[in-house]
Image (cartoon, rainbow, N blue to C red; front, side, top):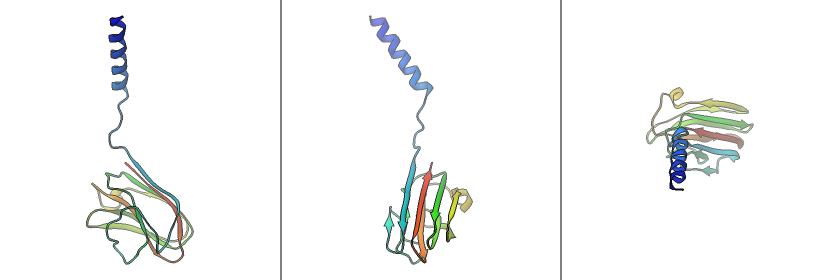
Length: 129
């Protein structure tokens, strides 16, 4: 009986080692929501431009950032760290993805979207490690 218990423990341990879990893997999403001049969602550093509408992911070593924007006004979409923000301005419909390297950035970042002007935007944005 004891031999069976030891064999089972060895089998379970070997299975766990064969399928390691990736540490730190994460996805942040903000889906089909309104982003206008009075909307804030997430924890953003001080905006790089005069605006009060924004959304940011948490801090992480993000690998990519995706946006699906449906109509609306102008937004600034990209990356920020504790002192620099780098983004691309978009109006109208947009389906686009970027990496921190596209903005010449890397390390511990936040994915961000800032409202720029015009009508409200309806968007899904997500960041992945």
